[in-house]
Length: 263
Image (cartoon, rainbow, N blue to C red; front, top):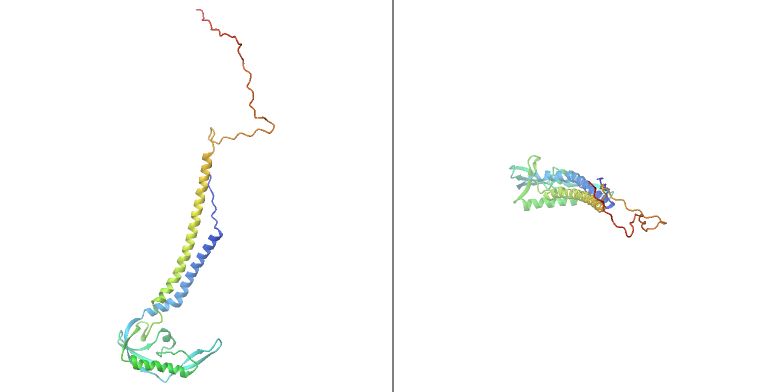
């Protein structure tokens, strides 16, 4: 039996679906690398710090001033000064005195100071912001214990008042790229499976039609289909031919028996 050939070419809609799936897969992989490099690594480092109980030991404001950069427009930048605020606390994890920082970002900006104010053009505004936090820690927090975060391996002499990143950042960095990746893979898989099922259904339909055509055809003595009778030419008549003449007996003929042989 001859093999039935079926077309495996994708339609325009199926081709667009596959392209969409591949695009989502590429976006998922790319966003996973970007978010992992920009957010996932700092978040993991921030989560390594352990919570501890801290108590304020001293609040100092040395005379040293530090510069910060402010912006006043698209092409307008400048520098201003702010005083340094140092808050030393007692860490319950290590039972030692450490410098308190508001979060990881301020620790990176200025490791010598506990607080870096939002940079303003006016130095007095920067000074007023630092003085407000100094009074807050002297009057309200000095006699209370609060939760801080301590990392013995990375910075044993520094503690953080709060984390810049939490577990929700870690969840978003992994969840959305994986959703895009899985959605793209699902679209491609469903499109390929649907096309494969359509091809199989088409092949079965053609095979069924071929089988029914062969079964309905009459078979000759040798198993082949008998040829159909050809139509007579236009000038010929369809009357049957007269029978050929045969020998007839006379009307009054009498049958004669054979005589027995004489012995």
